[in-house]
Image (cartoon, rainbow, N blue to C red):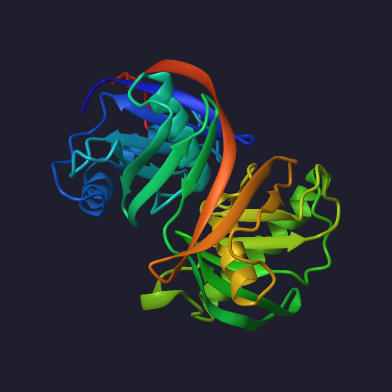
Length: 312
């Protein structure tokens, strides 16, 4: 592996993205899914070293910029975090788009990117504002109930927005930044209960995101406020792009959101994503608009004498 990796950091609604732009691992020329498998099997120490302490933090999301299989696409990308690899990341894609523009690799306008879960398109509206069109999203199960020893009966929707989500409306908690410890404890308990009871997405895939939402404590004309537990048991500082997509799919299927109508989703820290949903080839396809800002360029050094070079 290279001893030096060049990265560019950004944040989207408060949630960081660290993009490997030079010196990343050689993963071949297969699909992003195939390259993700190689990354995970052979180079996981790089993932750990970039997003975990002492360089990173438990809520840092990383991304490897790749050459696309099909050159008509602007790039390929593989997302990861402190716990492992992520099929798709909405805030991360917004950050990636702003990073590509910062590097003068793309112009304002429409572009496509290859991800492990499929091709995703985005429109770069300005140097900092991006509208992404996510993969088709849908609800798998409405009102799935589960008995949680510590919490009682919990009911939520299981939905796909690029990742698997369990979305809970009736939770009785205040979604505020001051209440994050209680929100974390609640969502981690629910996540463990789902796993213990073998409640999964399609093909037994883990439901690795838990989303709480409510219409209280909103500001800036938001329609709802959410709290999203991500893999690795950290919460999303942004409103969560894939989580907003899953939420839009549920709203649309329930008839509460018309095609093309804007839904303003607010995060626990107060940042906003604007989401809409439309039918594309008969599939519910969400679009998410948010802002990202470049925060840092760095050369990451992997010193062979540093026993913590691959993270804590």
